Amino acid sequence: MRGFIKQCVRLSLWCSLMSLMLAASVHAVILEGVGHASIHDDDLASARAEARNAAMRDLALQYEAQVNTSDTMENGVLTQSRMRLASSAKARNVKVIDEHRSGNLLRVTVRGDISAGTASCEGGEAARLKKRVAVTGFPLLYPDQARVGRIDDAGEILPQLLQQGLRETGSLQVFSTTSTRLFADLLNAPTMQEGGNRLTNVIQVAREMGVQFVVTGVIRDIGVADPAAWGSSVLDKMQRSIGASDMRRRFAVDMVVLDGFSGSPVYQQHFETAADWNAGPGISAGFGSAGFRKTHYGEAVAGVIGDMTRAATDALACQPFMTRITRVDGQLVTLASGATAGLRPGDELHLYRSARYFDSLGGTPELSDSQMKVTLNNVHPDFSNGRMPQVGGQVNIQRDDIAIIW
Image 1 (cartoon, rainbow, N blue to C red):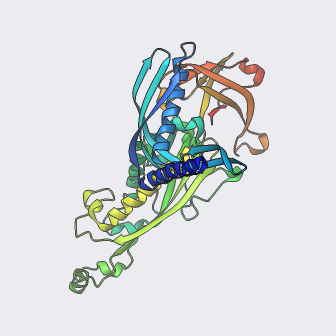
Image 2: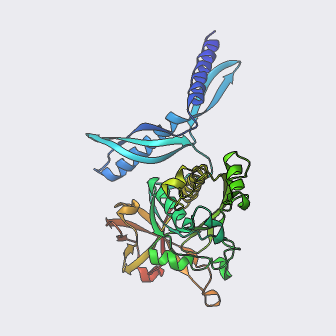
Image 3: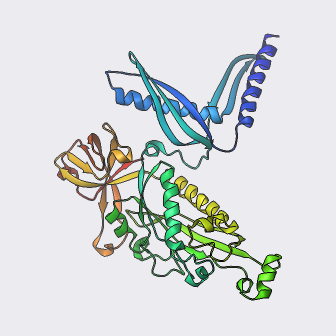
């Protein structure tokens, strides 16, 4: 009888948890999580990090939990029962809204947008840091297609809208260079590569702007389905008014995310849509105009740009945080990233040597693990410095090598 009662209680708990899981929306919801940590040796920074991680786990488990049970039976009697909760929820725009210390106990409360996550990557320590990203121009493959509606500025406005969306996620440092074109051969871009797997001049752009990644692409198609439907004759206007003309317009774009240190693509995807171009004469005066946004086509394009923003954000979330070494003086190492990227005193970064060889000077630099770490003790807005265990000359760490947090 006692075993039967335990089974019923366990089944009731399992059903309750399943009900909570099913009730959770597939869309993002705003939740708050609370985490606690003990402060040892007055090390508040470590306790704060531990409490924040605990609060993040609390956030995830509130949204979506996976229940695993393990039972031990002896002679038909339940002797031990274990239950494990795990979550695959994804958190965005997480902010610390409250921190309270009581003696040696620290409590941290965070708030964030929680949605269903994927198991593609965990993000690790790099997930809390803001990677630097530059967004370049998206040139038009066929500029003549832009004449209808006068949207020839699409190549500069689209990356500006993409840049705005990436900045609003709060997880990236975004820089704009929408007048820059990375590809000379638009027909084959962004797959046209030079020797050594390096794409055009992306490394130069990344170095000049001090970014880790470059987001770029090509607008493949913004043409109307039936050019004849936009004639100025009385018959053409009549056919449009009664819906007898094919008023659809296409939108197709290729986006690629490039690693600024090697020039290699880390993500690439094709996006496309089609919708009615229902803009009256003089209504649309540019790709980002109010008149354009109110058209069915403009609404469909806005949806695609939203998809592009989410895809780029997710792809970058899986990447490690990397920054250049700008100076080495004995054991002192200075990095090109600081507080604006989320770095803080006490952070440890792995040091990698960046090497090129005479037979492939234009190729991808090779990184080798120096087995050294730098521990930051001074963090400024745009740079930081710390110490490594040995003198830089002894382990061959120098300017332009790379520091990484995974």
